Image (tube, rainbow, N blue to C red; front, top):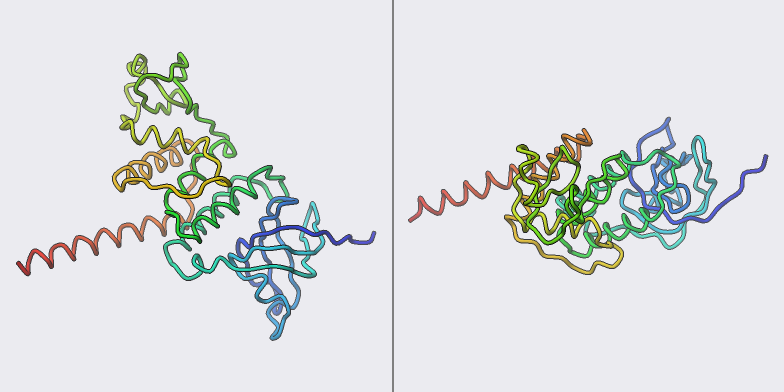
Length: 266
């Protein structure tokens, strides 16, 4: 049976060596979700698609999209890299984490619905200078459903009220209003600003977002609560997330050391 070439939009997620001259390239596509491509002779000098299959490259590709097994790329058009992401270690780390989340949340060749556009928008926002940690938080909140966890963010999970203070309950899988705090003594005791952003993140459209600014202490609270939800309810521990945590630890140590140096100079 003849193989049919299809035109599709794609984002290069990662690649790895395969045999002496070939590469396996994982691409997030708008047609068949994420899938692995065999690119023959990709390591050969002068290969015509070298720039088109670099990590964090996005654009239009032409090839054979197999719904099972490996797919194949034959040509590329209008491709470009997310330049800032490739050059900035912090943005690179968060972009890698976002792609890792998608890779874990969906099966290969599983249709993504609107998630291709969401991830493309997330990477564009990071590349254009938006806060990479907040963009990652938005993706984390909205991907929970794909992981089989669907927190109720829009009102109290018990009575539906939306006009009282809230807290998050892992036991009840969503928000409790202050009238029902007593139902879960292990609720997370979150401040209302953190709750506000979690609720906003659950419905915000990345494709329509231009910019967002969040206070540093609230960013720390968001990071802590999402870490707890992913640890307890999803059970996902990606290497890319550990690297982000390590970077944060390094930054804190450098900041503390710099502060001590200033104090010693006084």
